Length: 135
Image 1 (tube, rainbow, N blue to C red):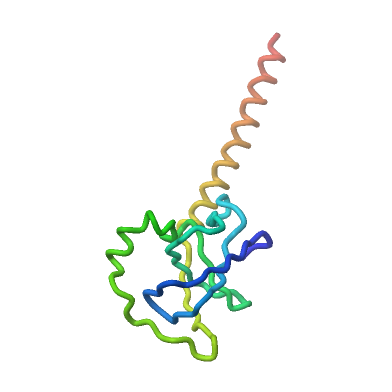
Image 2: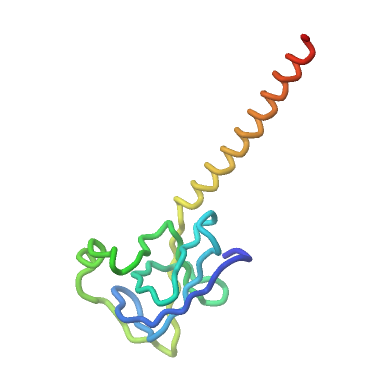
């Protein structure tokens, strides 16, 4: 996670896979431009988290299906009952890994747009200079 990451602590009401702690801290980038999820205090969410960082904190992003619980009917129907859930052992949660391919792609698109903007600016400046020289 970057220098601007935000950590959010949740009271866990239901777990669909993995270990069920009573609370969990999830990290996300500080803004949506860097794929951060904008959690609101008091909101109820279904959180898809993975990628334990060096501090043992899970992470999530806008690239996952994390969303307000009120908007998660499709997810809840697909997930069904909480199965395969284990009680925590010594308070530790085993690491998993998952990458955010969409976030990587978003950065490529952002960089491509910035490069295109610079190229266009140089092109139009050159045309403007040619018009001034013709007068």
